[in-house]
Amino acid sequence: MRSPWALCLIATTWCLFATHRALSALFAAPGLGRTASDAVVEEVIRIIKQECPSFGGEVSRATRTQTLQAEADSLDTLEAMMELEDHFKVELEDEWMEEVETVQDLADLIWRTPRGLKLRTVDDETYIAMIRKSHAENRWGELYDGWEKDIPPQYEHRGPSLAEEAEREKQAESKTPAVDVASLTVPQLRAALRTLGLEDSGTKLELRERLAGDQDRRAP
Image (cartoon, rainbow, N blue to C red; front, side, top):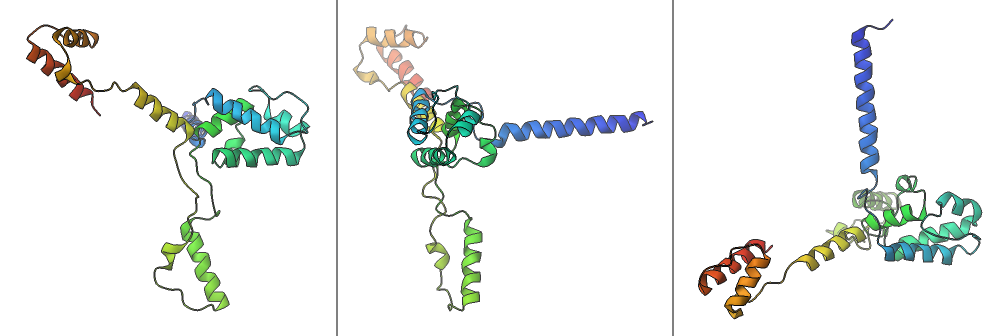
């Protein structure tokens, strides 16, 4: 029979293991919890329909990816994934795809994945080591100084995810444009201050200074 101390240690270890697994799942895919825009979902559906003519069912948000894989030609589903990655300029990792169950899940993953296509599969350090090894083994001579700077980039481009771009656009649209305080009349100044929940009494100069000060505080 295990002692209370041993049972406590086992329980603590199990809790830590469960917490680690939960955190790993939480941070495995980028931007967990973000939902794709309707436009992105519709585009994902369009591409799947286009690339999977062998699938006889209806493609919608709720369509299960397992159904697509089971009923569509395997080459069609492969072409669909390649077209989705190329169209949205993303690379979807296999471990992330394991969590995808529906077309909506797939669109959400595309929505939150940072965009960037790989021109090569290995990182810069590995690529440089491969070139050095190849030159040494084939006796191609010495490499010129600074050649490492001329290697092709690993990615065609790297950019924010569609979700991050949408959030930036939303923030930009929500910013209230600055008002030319000097051109406003006293009634306009008072109305603007009341809209902002500020005191609207005082002289014209005081009203201008109060409104201008609020604009300065709101400026990024």
